[in-house]
Amino acid sequence: MTTRDQISIGSQSILWVAGVGVGLLTLAFVLGVQVGKQSAALRRPLQKGVEEELKDLPEPLVDQLKIFEGDGPDKLVPTPKVDATAPLRDEPNPETKPAEAGGVWTLQLVATADPAEAKRVADKAKAAGFATTTLKDKGQVKVRLAKPADRAAMDKAAAKLTKAGMKPFAVKVE
Image (cartoon, rainbow, N blue to C red; front, side, top):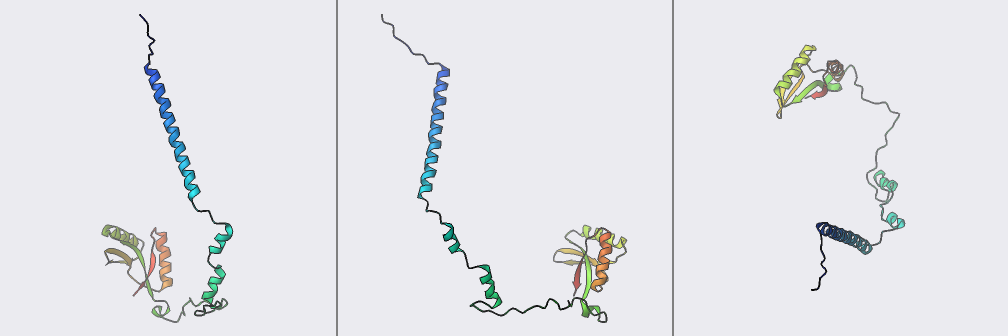
């Protein structure tokens, strides 16, 4: 009888061969992706040089602004010149009525959709000594001071309300 040589493969050998196979497949995949990226980069058109990019830019900003100033070839309406030394006219004449000087103003304390919040703010203003009125406008409840006055008086009242912890802002009464 002849003895035949037998090869036995254990479970560790199978795992080792499978691991090497997976590693080789992963390496082939990664290298294929890299080759694909390089070939795509070679097919892409060449990038422009700096000189070509500068040629593509619009005309300089100074030239664009000259068009609006009326100095350019496409003359538009000339812009009026402003005298920087002239006094500002924001201060109304004290002899005029508030409606003529700058209108009648009031302070709005809050505009909210929650009536309970509006009542809380109105009560806080009343505690600070200010009468308020509440009006509904476009789904909002607005709390404003009841007595309108000129802007200077409203600015003074706003300072007091700010010290009381509120954030009022002036609104013109129509």
